[in-house]
Amino acid sequence: MIPWLQLDSAKTPDGGQELRLKRRGGEFSIMLGANELMNSRLSGSEEALAKLSCQRIAGRRTPNILIGGLGMGFTLRAALAELGDDAQVTVAELVPAVVAWARGLMAEVFDGCLDDRRVGIREADVGQLIRSQASAWDAILLDVDNGPEGIVYKANDALYGAAGLISARAALKPGGVLAVWSQGPDAGFTRRLKQAGFTVEEVKVRAHGKRGARHIVWLATRGNRPPPRNPGGPCGRRPPRRRTSTSPSEARRRAPAAARVCPPRALALNRRHRRTHPVRYRSGACPRRKVQARPW
Image (cartoon, rainbow, N blue to C red; front, side, top):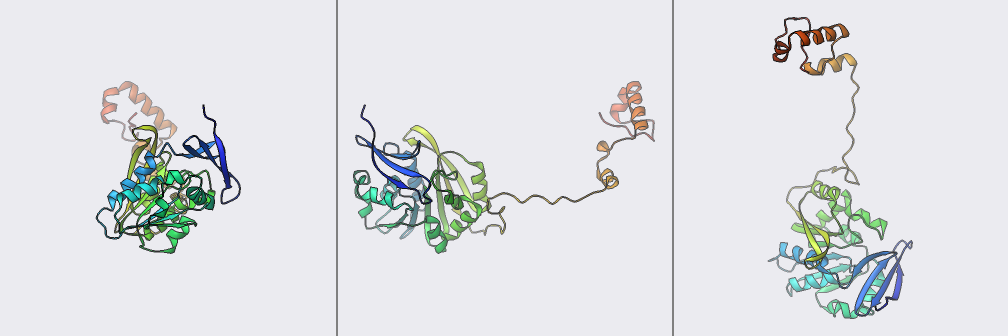
């Protein structure tokens, strides 16, 4: 078996972890510790991210696309194949070494797609680009970190929180699409997308054609209705309900009859009546008017 060779390494933006570029024959891998972030043989779900997004905006003139995360260029190449000559694709990559690998050590994987005249590379935080312009993009494709539950850069969590999703919605043109890749499902993220004012579709895709791991692509379309002012705070959680103090007598008065607690004497009479008149008791015809029949 051909052994893996480490070609290069780079620090994550916070300096706390290290990305490693490895090669085995014609296969490339980018690792973070023991976790493999991407492999040149597994590109199905990243390509699906681009294809599904471009299908949603087909027919638009001069579409403007923002891709968050360069990776191994799978999403970029698939988007270029789907889009026309009038499209403009901006790729935001936070780690400069990844861009250097694309032009050097992994040039054969990228196959010259960075030289396409439709492509612009920005070594910047995609979140800053999203927040800097309003109604600027027809589609925003996020293949950043590991999805909503990132492992590379903690600050990426801001992209997937309530405030980040509202910013993404504002950066999209009417009817624009926010597409998000994830390693797995996340019900909380789906809820936050809806709370931010998106129409959401969750698509399951495979890592390698019809085989491999199952990944998730969210397709969130910007509607015309504005999002709520407070969609659950910065983390997308609903604020806790305010509790009001109620006196015991008020609580008993508000409770339904079946839930009210009888005094001990009345409870004993009810039990005795249940034993002696089971049929009449179940029908609710209790001869003892002063004793409340309880539907056990």
